[in-house]
Image 1 (tube, rainbow over the protein chains, first blue to last red):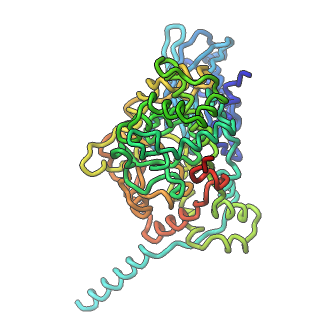
Image 2: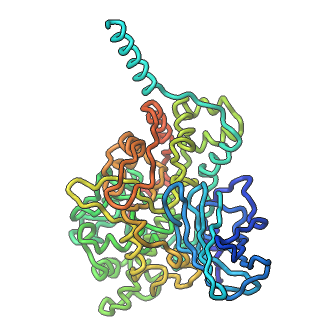
Image 3: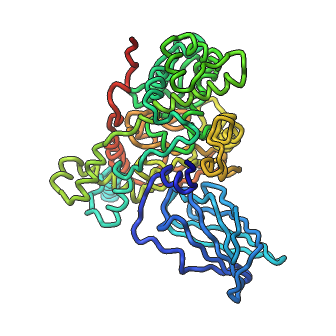
Length: 134
Length: 395
């Protein structure tokens, strides 16, 4: 029997369910130079601490046209606590229509997190900070 | 002049009293209750699979692992077993700053209870499964001081062990063949893990108290917790910020943090996770190795593992379950008591290497005492039949 990625890791870690988690679907973040607009959908909804999980990032230009073929580097952390991410998440697939699969995310504390995405598309580079509160 | 002196003395007495005075409990809010439930044992999910260990949930493997755990023949001098340092009556620790077996171990002996839930083992996470962890001490010169051939020799030559091994894994290994030796050695780790998976934390007074809070049963709450313990818990989830790392029902996020603990006397600061991450990636018995799960999905922890200088001097957050029973504290047992540990976090000194993620808490002495009172409510015997907590009786 082949266990799925999420199946294994849903069981691997502690479940801490929080009420009133913000939904990720309706929010978007514009990159610093205004070139890209990023939104995400989490496989783990609502977001919980201590669970390895994946997101699908969605990337558009400022006119709302999906961007394919982009390179996205991911870093981040908790500025308040002066530490980075617990894991090294990375984009592992790009199914198309501006979607990018981001695997290996885990937030190990409650509070305000920042994900710094550095995006290279059509020869242009820009970065965006996606904020997440758990 | 005299009046001023008297005023200073009175102000000083007030200040001293305020510093030592315990805080009073406040009513629990709905938000508090959500946090309390997240910390209670009832929130503990089902045991995660031990990927790559086909015998993890086989009772025969657990029984063999149990026997081996207490068997001192698995050591260079015939006098050291796993239970030498992981003593059941001390919640599987040893009460020492650093483990003492054939020599002195590099670090403090951590408990085994509940480690089936952790993606990383050891203070520095240098192993990624219970079974891979169980192998290291056997070949560590300061611990069992044995080697894989000698360990397997004991099993092959003991008719009972040999028979039980064969039932689980088939033919006994040819000890002249390195590949067979390595595979059989991994199998030994896997039977240890089958036993260790059974060692789960028991329901502590804290868990009963959470139930009483959720049920709104004030009488039961008062029976279970003193005011000091209630305030201690309120500090724990509030001002003291303990749940930043000690979260979830095992009271650990199983992650790595530099909290500025000073080096052990006479030692250079320990680099911790930054070295542990390199070691686990190179461990032949890791998830990606020949005897592991070997799939990207099952080995995702290793696949997406964080490395880098930020992890200098960072160590794995220990569970606080049974914390009262596992002194001394920290990776080298530097802090002898809970009191000393709480004072450490209250001060949050500069780290000797890397940087201390914690910030000074500025709690009053009375509050620290209340926090300590709460920590004493987290103890309970492991949730396992008593027979697993002592050496098995052999026929």
